[in-house]
Image 1: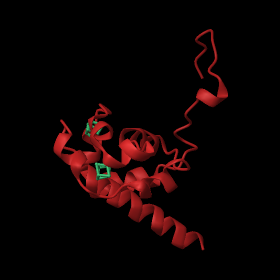
Image 2: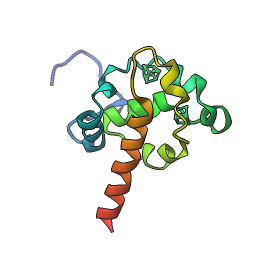
Image 3: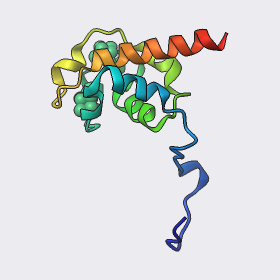
Image 4: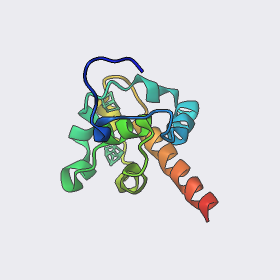
Length: 114
Ligand code: SF4
Ligand code: SF4
């Protein structure tokens, strides 16, 4: 590892090799527009679920791409799949399908764990 003269706090490190990116890969494979997201937050700003319970699609997408799934696995089911976020996304991400696929992947993971 390069020595930059400083170190990162452990809590601030993202270990892409150790994290489980299988959910993000599943979404990428089935909904390529997942890659187009620039994390602008327009989807979160317009989300009804977000207005009431702080659901943030922007945040969840970032966590999924990092493979930090623990926080996402319950929260993702707070989406009502209304599709409002698709209407405001400047990048044309099929957000509803991204969420539906994430929900499917987490359900499958849970079933296989039983
Ligand atoms: S509105 Fe689209 S580009 Fe912006 S954070 Fe949401 S999904 Fe990403
Ligand atoms: S589909 Fe989900 S994330 Fe998008 S606006 Fe509706 S409740 Fe929010």
